Image 1 (cartoon, helix red, strand yellow):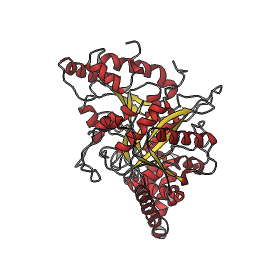
Image 2: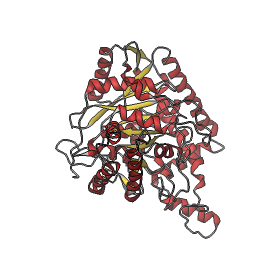
Image 3: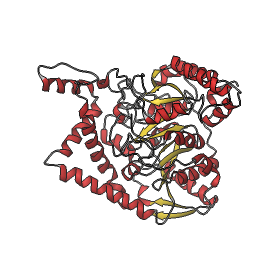
Image 4: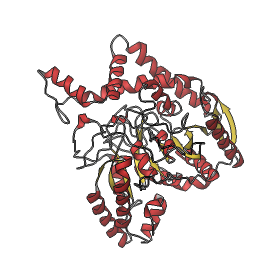
Length: 492
């Protein structure tokens, strides 16, 4: 096999089981690509090469006996906020220093139990707060894609920019990611990869560094729809260590991909046609509608009237929860400690020097909206809006089985182009935050390239616990689009 890193996860797993190549060979192939690409792309904050080869050898021993798990021998990357026992986990923030967990997150343990091989930890926006992967204490990730005739470095999206960029640049077969307001789907859209946020509670949050507990959800980024379904089947599980975990069976989503969409009703929410959206995005959306019609789906116009309040509500709820969750980082128990003149000064100095600017901005917003004089005016009102948004979806799903929307209002933008204006940066989440506020499954997949040669994607939002419909719709669109474009390997 000439280039093992070009394989999809599904084909790699088949090849390993057929003994076409060994786990050590495919792991080493990926480590070689990381060696070449990572200095330019900065997707990995830590490469665990020695550990990866040990895991690969263990997989080869199992495969030689005809044994092994669903992902036996498949090399993957892990977003820096999933705790990995004995391997540094910092959420890309200085305040955690060189924190090395003594325990494993449930999601990564599920992957190791099924034979996956860990290549290393992947870069992200600090504490998952960001839409461009520019807030990481390890420096920004660079998107493997470039505009035609333009060498401007582009964002891979955030916060899971390292996960998306590593998959797009063939530095892993697939990667774990997390989504609080679109942090799986937006990076997937910017890098021509596929990502899904499952129903809230499908995947355990145990061992994930918390940002906003009622919104955070783990999910995968991979090269195609089938690979994403395969990863999600392994990542999801009921977990007594997570009080928000849903005790429901995990379906075999890979077996539903061939069902098609004949007889399904697909909703088109009119509120997702926003001011300033490019003609290319509108045309892409219409093309997706035509593909689904041709495959036998019925298209239904629906309304989600409270969508316009989703971003303001999100940027009250998420910072409020972050303010509470990140109160634990005080320099007393673990992580960085900056000595002050007294106890209060030590707290203040540690947090001032340990947190980045975007994290501090959100913590201040969160503390403000939770304060005695403003709790009712802001936080309580935002929670009421959140309930209205959920009710909008529930009404819409009386008419349809799933919704089709754009993933983002634009293709990837240049690094530094929007970071000076936090509000403009927050607007990147305009199409994605509603699914988090309502706890619904949503996925993004690439469909075409824009005039500048950059990927454009569509989003499918499903009913609670109905990831199957998302996968069925996505597979039809993927087959219809025939998207196979790859970023030019300027790093090789």
